[in-house]
Length: 181
Image 1 (tube, rainbow, N blue to C red):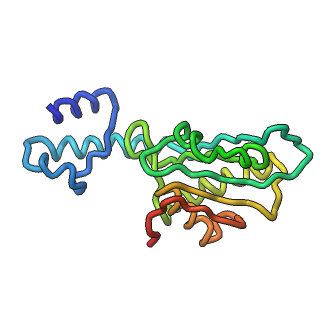
Image 2 (cartoon, rainbow, N blue to C red; image 1 turned 180 degrees about the vertical axis):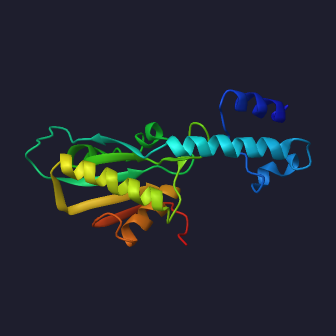
Image 3 (cartoon, helix red, strand yellow; image 1 turned 180 degrees about the horizontal axis):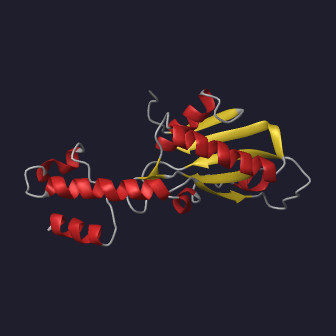
């Protein structure tokens, strides 16, 4: 039934991150047509990745004054997440009152509806530079406080972007990051 469901979904241009290297797919390896289904899934995901880009949403502090400088927090979601889920985190009263928060969603599709980050990803590095530039061109940022933070895979990406000086930040917050390579 799983094979039929995946094949039906593929007909609707859905993809699921079906990767035979993942342990959860081991029971399927011996089934006829699983290889073809995994290849179709890979093809659909690649087509989506070719069209995808990093997106972001900016939240300004309560009482925002465009003539005033504010500290900046760039927040990255974890693997298998979205911009909307990310916005339910990084919402402390202090952040809401004092910081410009930039919620950033990766271009890297995990499946049709969720995204993740990969460390040392040249495309993600270029995209985060673009986002950072757009934000710093639009808002007055306190140069003494530019922080990037991320959860899990986003924490690894935040460390990568900071350590390799992809964007000029003054601090990094990693919430349960994986161990960077």
